[in-house]
Image (tube, rainbow, N blue to C red):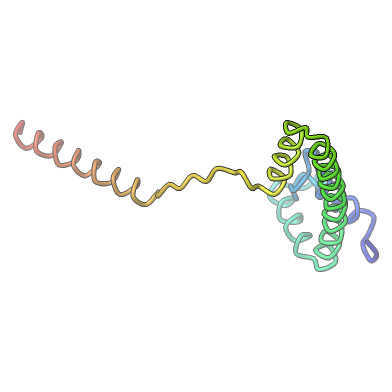
Length: 147
């Protein structure tokens, strides 16, 4: 993170550190990194937004997240290799239960078994709109006959 000030670096660290209250929150990250006690909340938010538009900050955040993604990929590969080894051992030993479990975990890791729910919101919304219009017509009819 060359070419960034210590405060900018602190902002980036706060913004990119997972499992913290500041993760992905520019305003909170800015409040932690900079002295904001004399700033309005709107001023803090605007300064944080401006900081996120700074090319040096964008580049530093991209670099930071790329490192994290690389570490995650290494962990993912390690786990998959371990599962492949477990499958091979279980299959060789004719241990079908553990072989199947290893295959299941490998499949889950690539989202092979996710359920897909296909809902058509447009059709549901149209049906609700039609029901609402029918109800409005009934209310208008009752109002006219009562008046």
